[in-house]
Length: 185
Ligand SMILES: [Zn+2]
Image (cartoon, rainbow, N blue to C red; front, top):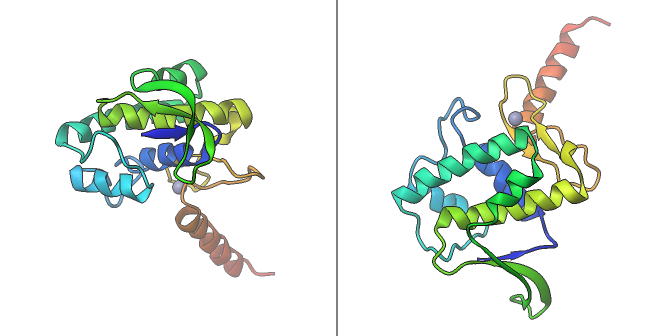
């Protein structure tokens, strides 16, 4: 896998979304990454094509381990531990041409690297960039009550409050609206 060093949005979204597939966040549905099919769908959903190929059950177990590690890093940002994620699979960086022929600074995963190390490289490089350019306060817990979701806010304004704005943000707005209607003016 080739990872663009000047674009941290993809890797940060992968890290947030991966953490939020865990059963402790997805309380009503349970773990959203229980098997190889779900993991393949998650990767495709983020446009990730691992060199390692289709996920195996061992990959699923390893990714669950990475997911716990990422949760810890989103709760307690740590540059050294984040950089360590990129070590097993990372080679480079180097200037390479992307699919459109433009020169880009990229790191590439080592040939033969397991899927989990490729994912660790994608997320680790991005989270380190966010720490450096935007700061640790962009690593946040969801503002919705009863939600254990975490996220990395890579928006320009930096005002994101919910792990899934269309779900958690909406839930909070509906509750506030109901509360306002109950309060007599
Ligand atoms: Zn949430």
